[in-house]
Length: 169
Image (cartoon, rainbow, N blue to C red):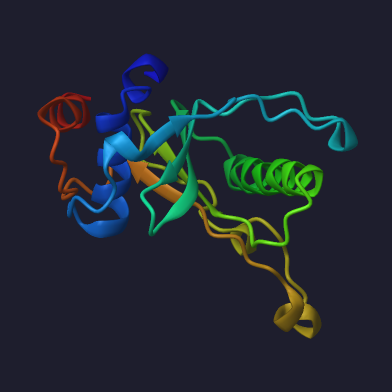
């Protein structure tokens, strides 16, 4: 699956289908490969995301991540948040080296779930954490972007291979 998703046309097709209802907003030629290792010595984190790309078309500058998940994982919402924030930390460290005062680009992570059973784990942090009502206004409720092949089947993919992969699975 990683090899399939490394194709920039297929990669952006997932994001265009999820975020833009299939409109070809993101273009494959504006993607650049990034190091998928999400290692962080401060967090004792030694993992990697499946596919990460830097995107820059002159108007939009962002990082996009696809994490392929083949089974329901109760911790996936936390893992997605960690990947996203470690990506921000990496960019922040890099910008400090360049002494840049520019804002960081957004990081967008999409979890592509290919398991056989419907996803029944948390999709947002508040489904996993018992939030005391006295602290509710201070709680940062991370929401995970999830495409699951057993759920919504109305994604508007443009790439025939992506469409076929999704619907064959």
